[in-house]
Length: 354
Image (cartoon, rainbow, N blue to C red; front, side, top):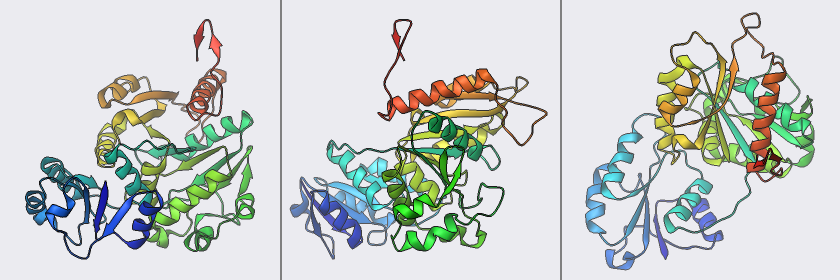
C-alpha cells in the first residue's frame, strides 16, 4: 500500500520511509483515482476540520488519516468524534513521529516487535504520591538485581527535596542537541540502588519542553537500563505526559478514592490517545476504610485493573511507611511486572504459575 502525505513534516516522512513504507509527498491533494486502495495522510494545517466531510466524499475508496496539529487538551475530542463518524483515522495533537508510525502499523495491521522497558507513572492530581510510588517500585526492582533508571519527567515539579548537580532542566541542552551519552547517565543521582534524574527545577521553562526531547531521553535511558521508571506527573498539559502515554509499555495510574472525577477525565483523555481503561494499572495511595468508594469498586467502575492498594497512615503524612505485608505485596507486583517485560521467569506456587 502506498502512503500519500500532505502536510507531514519531512522528519516524520523520513521516519516512515525508514520503516519500509512507500511515501509519496504531495503539495496539493492528489487525484482521488491515484489514491484508491491506498492511504492518504493529511494534517489540520492543510485540510481544516470544516473540510473533513468534503474530504471523505472526495475519497470514498481511500483510507484517510487526519493528523490534528493544534496543541491543547481542550477541543480535539470533538474533532476525534467527527473523524470516527466519517471513518477517518485520527492522530491527536503532540503525537511524535514514532507515535504516528505506530498508528500506521495499527492501520495497516503490520506486526512489529519493539522492546519497550518503560514503566510510566501518572497521577490523578498533584501531591497524590506519584513520585513516591515510582521510587518505591524502582527500589524494589533494583533490589531484584536489575539496573533501574528513574526519570523525573513531571516538568511542573522536580520531585526532589533539594537541588542537585543534575536535573531535567540542566540536561535539556543535551536533549535538544541529541547529545546524551552514557557518561551523562552515570552522573544521575545514585540513590537506593538505582540512578535518578530529578525533574524540572526551572518553572519558567515548563511549557517549553518539546515532545521530541522527552522521546529522545526515554530512548537513550532505555538503552542503558533494564527498566526505566518514568514519573510523568499529573498535568496533561505537558509534552512529557503526552509522550509518556504514547511510549510506556506499562501505564500505572496513582489515584485516591476522592479523585473519581479526576480519574474519569484522565481516562477519557487517554482514550483519544488510543488507550483504553484496561491499559492502566490502578495504584490507590493512602486508602482509607472510611471512604465511601472502595478502591475495588473504583477500579471496576472505570474498567481498570487494581494493582495495589496502600493504606492511609495518619502519623506519617509525608512518607510511605510500609510493613512486611505491604512490601510483600509490592514485591509480588514487581515480579509480575518483570515477567510481563520479559525480565523474569514465571514461578510455580502450589501448582499454579505466577
